[in-house]
Amino acid sequence: MAGCGNNGDALAFGGATGATVAVSTTDKWAATAWATTIALNQSKFGLAGCGTTSDALSFGGATGATVPISTVERWAGIA
Image (cartoon, rainbow, N blue to C red; front, side, top):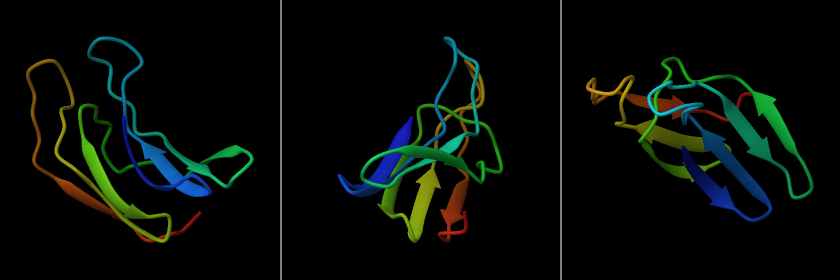
């Protein structure tokens, strides 16, 4: 899973439910609770992220055990 933001306003995206089962979930933290919002375009795990909840990037990762990817997705704060 990757993430960005701060302790009062953050995103967590991607990740895996098993050893190699990638997910596209994007969750937003708003200081007191998590809310599931618009998913990534592509399921992936082992990715990186940077930015804020209104302007973030998700990059790299893998879609399976031996399938690395080099795509970048932009989050524009749409929930």
